[in-house]
Image (cartoon, rainbow, N blue to C red):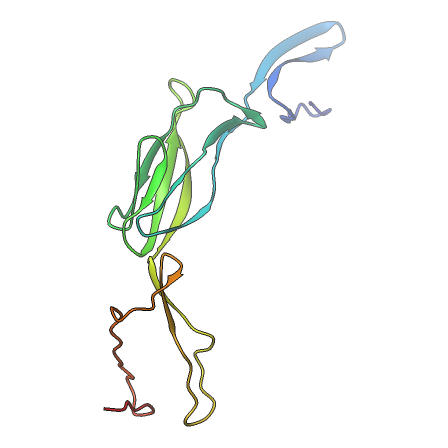
Length: 171
C-alpha cells in the first residue's frame, strides 16, 4: 500500500505499480515484494544413545512451501549426535548437541538456517521413586533399566559415593 506521503508498505508478495500525479503529470515506480524464506523443522529432538530420528525440514517463502528444496545438515558435537546428508540424527553418547539445517533458496541468495537442539540420553538408566530422605533408616529401591527393560540379574554392580558423612554403607 502507499499512503498520501508516498510511504510504501509491503503487505504481500508480488509486484505493484506506484503512481504519483500532480495535475495531469504522472510518474510511476514498480516495486517488488518477495516474502522472506524460513525453514520449518523440529526445534527439539530427544533420542536414546544408538537411537535415531529423521528431520523433516521444509523451506517456506512466506507461507508457501518451496518444492524440491535441498538442505544440508551439520552437528556441532559429532561425539554426541551425528546427522546424515538426508537429515537422519543418530545418538552417539549422552549429552546435548545442536544440528544446523541450511538451504540456499535460489542462486545468488544467502543461505537460510535453522537449529535443532538434540538431547541424547543413555540406554542405561536408574528409576527411583524418590531421591529425598526425610528420616534416618529410610530406604528406597532403585530399579536399573536397559532400553526400558528392568535388569534383574547379577550383572549390575552398585557403588556408593556420598560426598558427605550423612550416609553409611554396610560392609
